[in-house]
Image (cartoon, rainbow, N blue to C red; front, side, top):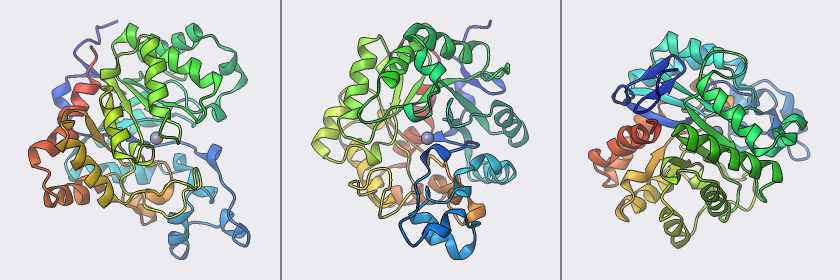
Length: 349
Ligand SMILES: [Zn+2]
């Protein structure tokens, strides 16, 4: 087996970090999110099984998890291919594909998409949230789980020889379950063997990221090579956010393009707007964390695709970057967020 040190591992093999270019660190190209179906409010039941059409788009934007078809991104390979070409034309180079076991990772499709578009795709090893863990996963010891993860990076995932280049997104709930706790420890063990990048999906509570870092640290993880996803919906209090930033992981603002009023997964959360995300990122840069911020859209439902009136994978490059410049974030700092920080993170140690 060739040494991974100093390289990045894509679904087409090892590449030099300098080849990555603009990188979205948290996307999905094919997945099934049926695990998070949320029934519509009373009176709107019929909308759950209606096809996606123009007159439903606003409702769908507000209720993305209440329409069954919307959760099947795995049915959209042709549209995703076209949208990756659009991302490439807008200056994109790489996508980190965060689909892990539990939400229907599809290594062969990822390889095919990379071949056909020329976009570097990095696949994720490991397990999504507890609600998707089968009995078999729950029964495994930390060491057995670590073995599975290491194998996905070194030999290939899901019975293929296509290898993962990152561990995650590793799913955590709030409160953290016993099975998720084991997976976190296994992630730390696998990371210390492999020197690889890790990415975590925290529970929807501002204490969750702190708890995760503590568990991983105790299990020997390299926090400086770990991304904490979904910061935009997790820590709102500025003082608490800066306290968390001190722990040294990457802070990922990855829900760009998601703007809705009622967040079914956690109704108490006010989902920020893209403008608010940009101000948050600027605040973190002003506080000295420009080397620790990464961004993405976390596309995981059909309505986020251009095909269904959504923003697609190029939204950050096309719409967010120009607004960041207006808000005084320099091109040099934007390049750190889009190119340099992902490159540092994705390179094996
Ligand atoms: Zn995700």
